[in-house]
Length: 273
Image (cartoon, rainbow, N blue to C red; front, side, top):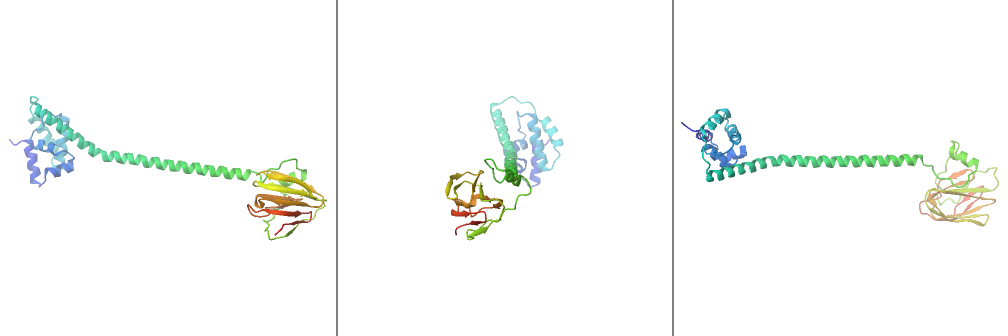
């Protein structure tokens, strides 16, 4: 009676297939395929035998059920032989290596996919944090007052700073303009208030008397009165806003621009060229 292995070999040859073709498709070591066709799978667990036969039969287009049962029954218990045992261990080792190689690409894909997901999550988290920081910064910028008033302002200044009746700020004044007329008020004399947007060295003379010389720090403000005129020098004209009596002037120059000998009276503001 023709053996199971011989029948499978006959089917393979009839289809013009080689053992190398079977190895590539079934991912089974070629020595195991030879052992199947030679009916020499000995001292191997029936679980492995069924697995090898099932894969090989599917490759050949045969029904595994017709071969697995007959192959198992055709095997008779044999006395352990050192040579057979060594061969069996070698076959099992080759089969294990082959299965590991088969699963390795899938493992790589999973690891690579996990890395990509982690990178995407980090990018999204960074974007959310950046957006939150920007929104918080904008929120505090909106609610922060234009300048922090120090000292004890009079009731009129406080009313103008906290109500909607505050006079509109003038446009940035070019250094080329020598004289800027100021609104004539009933107030006698002149009062200058400086609001510091950034640090600025300031020198103030009131009716010829030195009133202040030093750094006005960012966010602070100072006021000085005079009967006739105020002489003003700034190291950073773009860093301060002025209020002369009730008129607000938004910056006299650009950032870092130094202006000296600015003359202020209640009627006009004279900026040197």
